[in-house]
Image 1 (tube, rainbow, N blue to C red):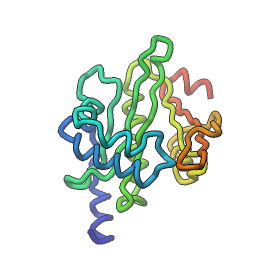
Image 2: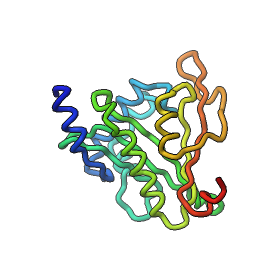
Image 3: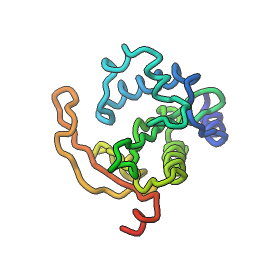
Image 4: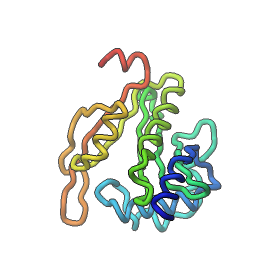
Length: 188
């Protein structure tokens, strides 16, 4: 796709919740994410490529009480990016959720797609009764991602050194949170 056509495709992009029919495309994009950005994910290609398609279908279940949901950015029929929201299920943490699995294919970067995915996740969280906070972790050295999350309202609250080991290197992650409920916003 030419640069001009890609820009048009990104502009007409649709953000929508994935469902089990998208499992194969979701699996493919996440395996590419784990391969191309190993420092950004705890999961590895080796861990996830052997999982059956039903595992991926369950991860994007349409059940009303699903513990997670994933949004996809579609350019025509192509899945260009994804971001997930996982709800806490323990009684004392029901007010929290976590943004996870954020990835945009390299050919689609630079068009605001990542920001639109984060905004979709935050909008979903805001519409969830009782939700106060969305948290995430991001590789501390990934300045572009930290800047994106900060621009979307996330605030750092700590750095975890030695969080992940990638090959023979250790990677630190930055923990961030974003208020989505009135009580959390008042705490700022």
